[in-house]
Length: 163
Length: 111
Image (cartoon, rainbow over all chains, first blue to last red; front, side, top):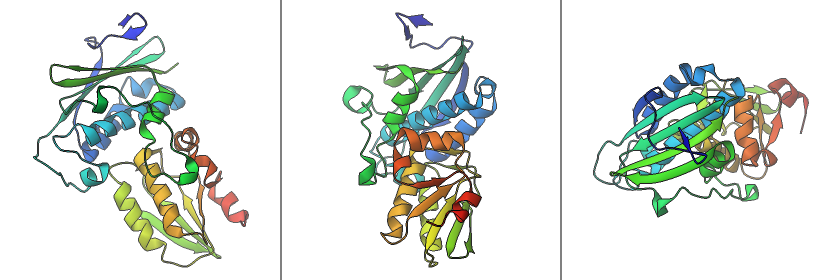
């Protein structure tokens, strides 16, 4: 599972798998379903909360960036696509091992912008920002974050403390 | 997106009667809030006690609603559960809003 302290990109057979489409309604439904069953349903309220924050932000990022044509969450929620329509599928695997939630997120969308996950610099609250919080939240609540582009898929892996 | 509003003295109280404000509902939340905020009031309290989860899109929508109010009315929040409170704290947006533990405290605290 862990190689050199990092997750390996292939989830084990024992991991629980969820398949969803890269649109806001499907992400909402998929998250609701994932939260209701093991391993997430087995966690403490605090750890479940952390997991839901991280997973929601990761999945929202896929919706925003993985489409054929650039898509904002606003246009996605309104059902508007700027370019050719192609459903992007997201697969999520979760596996609870020794108090750590191991997470794999794979999608067949466009490569992650810049080829690496964003640093997640927090915007200044005084500027009353309406976005730009996502990667900061992800990086605040998980560790071991790693990304690769593999066989035309994006693969993102990370760990969330669940103890 | 079900929002319930009521005047309590000079305070407009809007309760989000949904279990989440997320990317799928953020736009609708803003539109509904825009309509409800046309009711004049001295203060506005957004009661989030039914909301179990808010993502960064939901947070952005709450910030957008605060901007709709303009300088003379501030948006106050009440009833944040621990997960929602954490999203505000980690993004430091808890420094921007007046956050009451529950609606009753918010109504008692005039200002």
